[in-house]
Image 1: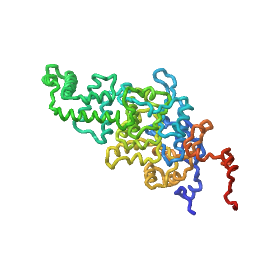
Image 2: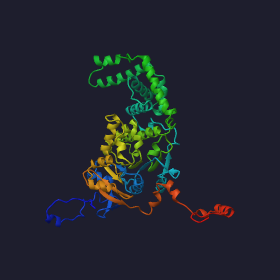
Image 3: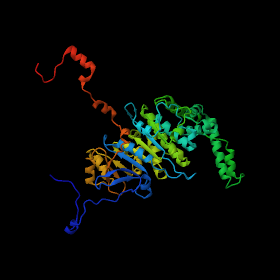
Image 4: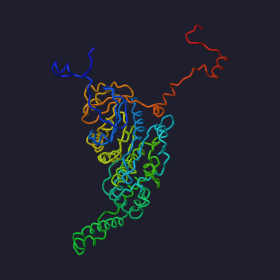
Length: 489
């Protein structure tokens, strides 16, 4: 039977001197231990931030992928324990060591509880059930979003509710509505306030909006021209003049108001609205967000806002809102949502500026990169996200030509692809750009074993006891007798 192995080209002399056990140098000499290199038996260390510092990776974004049951969740939980023990650098304000801030997005229950509950309890932290945290404010003032951020969020919310892009006066209505909200109700900004404003917008509001805009432009021009300049006078004299048809504008303002009303009171889970802020929860040292019970629309919208708030926090240098370590488990469903993909793509393009080591788990990377139609905005954005994630932990892969072809484009050889389809449970390939894939066996510590239960539903079905050991069946046998299969009657 033919064997599969590397083919070495060379002369007999070079072949005689060949050492088949030579492998590339280790990626890291510091950080946490992952396990044992399957080829050299060395300990494999992992330090996301050192890998980036040394130029091995471009950003601390990691995809954990492979078939179900290969050990993805186990690896993520183990990484959560070990990475949280590391120091998160030095606080620039007081020069003291910082503790890691860890954030977990838990999307499936395990034995009636969030899957990561044991990990969260082990780290003495809390679980936030988003399905019970109703009245979440998408325009939360505590997140420090400016007018452009609020307008972008409002447009995406309305497009998600309507299922189609906004065109024409609905966009202008949102501009005028957001302006009025910030002018009159900045401290209480919320979708309800914006809905209320939109329902009553009229031609006078358009005039006020253009007048305020003209004042800003005139103030800018006065730095170059005098206040007596004809240009400045023309702007200041144009007191909100416009030729926007009032009836069409008011109709479209009412239309977008109905979209926001649907988010608040329609089929989006009834979790949005009010003044509830997630800021305190997002800035916790360790927090697990339990997403179970939310419908797909509500999950996608809130997950999109978490990316948006993180991008805003980066622009504001609001580091308390940016975790050092983040785990997102089985998030491929959200990649069908344009709002989510837009906000995630924006965050991924800025990934080099983040200190977050982001781990995203999926069974099939192709589900992430083939969302939407060919040439569509969502396909373009998902491809951008894929390019931004250049490091992968790969467990066992299916014998699927499309999946294997995709992996070969990452620079994985045919021999290593063959090995990926036969990896035992708990073994992974670590692939970084421009380096051969590194295969390792993940080793759990005794303290981690109790935290790694990931299939309790099936485990319950396999824990059995002899049926005749129960008192009830013993009484039944005494009363009715029994027949053993195989015995002659």
